[in-house]
Length: 111
Image (cartoon, rainbow, N blue to C red):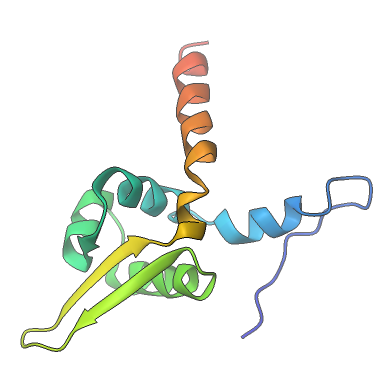
């Protein structure tokens, strides 16, 4: 399945649409935030950190982020199955964006 990019007019930065297509969605930035703050986490831990997200939604979002090269999925061959998620180097490059969003929220929350 081909990833759809966000339409951006010609007068705007050409890579803005690409960036939006990578980080857009209700859960992606929240997942990135938790992986930055907590490092490597198991699926159930991540689901508890996020809160109200369904199994199907979390699974599909993680798969999409893995396909985009933002997260690494490590599966251990054991019973019961153990799977861990962590940010890739590419995923870590989003940290400045997350920090700026946190600072923006801090400065503008009560205005």
